[in-house]
Image (tube, rainbow, N blue to C red; front, side):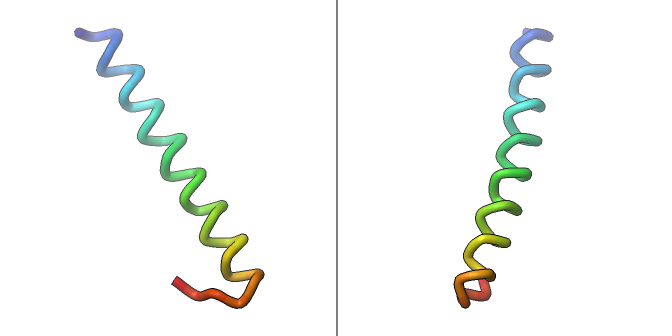
Length: 33
């Protein structure tokens, strides 16, 4: 269970990073979310 929790935390961090990158890219295209 500990391994899964650590893996899930890493995935949440990666998800947040990707979401921020997507939002920045969309803003560059003129979409402000």
